[in-house]
Length: 173
Ligand SMILES: [Cu+2]
Image 1: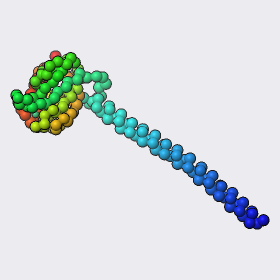
Image 2 (image 1 turned 135 degrees about the vertical axis):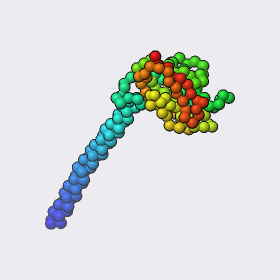
Image 3 (image 1 turned 180 degrees about the horizontal axis):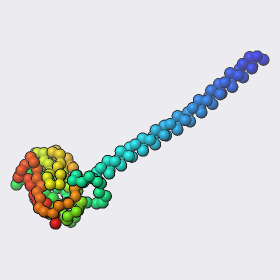
Image 4 (image 1 turned 90 degrees about the horizontal axis):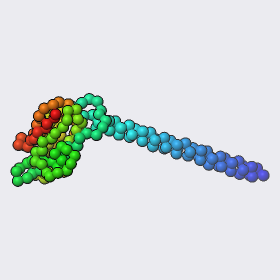
């Protein structure tokens, strides 16, 4: 009889324990969910910060929302030596390849230069000093995009600091 009671108590204790451990498991899952949600919020805000930062032109301090003119420039090694080349000539229509294309922009226009080094033999960079546009020294097939505001009228030069013969004009009207 006593043994039965002890057994019964042990059983209830045991089942209570399993109940307790089950109850503990639920908050653990919730904790994990909260951590995951917090992780998403943190990653999201880092991503959002980076995204807004990428909207700040290199010659400005505030983000500019909108689509800039895309200027696609590649660097190549041709018979003429190292050259800047473009398929777009600063305009949206895709035409023949231009060597050292003249980039034309309207004053106040947002522009994104997309540079790609297609030259195996050398690193190249892209600079427009007056607009604080300075790329890294790009290795083979390394791309970089730089956004700036064409906030001054005039004729400017873009160039590669490694090869002074690599240069072209930027006209803002
Ligand atoms: Cu170069």
